[in-house]
Image (cartoon, rainbow, N blue to C red; front, side, top):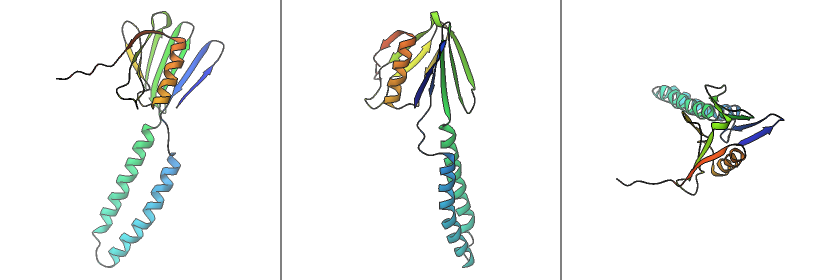
Amino acid sequence: MVSSARTATQLMIIARPDQSATWRTNVLLLLALAVPVLVISVAFAVLGAWLILPFAGLELLALAAALYHVSWKQQCRHVITVSADSVWIAKGNYAPRQRWRFPRHSTGLTITAQQHPWYGPELKVHDRHESVTLGEFLNREDSLKLMELLQQEIRVHSHSARTLRAF
C-alpha cells in the first residue's frame, strides 16, 4: 500500500505491504485452532496415548511462530520524504532501522522493467555514492503508484529494460 501526504515544504510517501490480517486476527485464529487440538490431544492422553501431547504443543508453537513472523514482516515501512533540498529515506519494522539522506540536486531515480507482467518495476533512489532499493515488497499496482509519485519529484537518471543472461 502506498500513501502520500504533501505539506507546503515537503512530500512524504509511505510504502508498506498489504496486510491481510491483523495480529489480533491471527491470535483469534490460533485460539480457534488450539482449543480443538488440545481437547483431542488430552482425550488421547487420557486413553493412554500421552505421546500426542508434546506433538500437539509443538504444532501449535510452530503455527504461532509462523503467524508472528508473517505479522512482523508486514510491519515493514519505507518512508520517503522529499523536501526542497534533500531526499530522506527510512526503512524498518515498527521503527526506522536504516536511514539515508541524499542531496536533492544530485539524486536520481533508476527504474528497471519488471521480470514478469505480474511484478512491478524495480525502483532505486541514488546519488553518486549510494543506491537504495524501494518498495520491493509492493504489488504491481502499488509499485506503479510509487513510481509515479517519485517521478514527479525526482529526475529519472536511468530507465532500462531488464536483461536476462543465459549461462
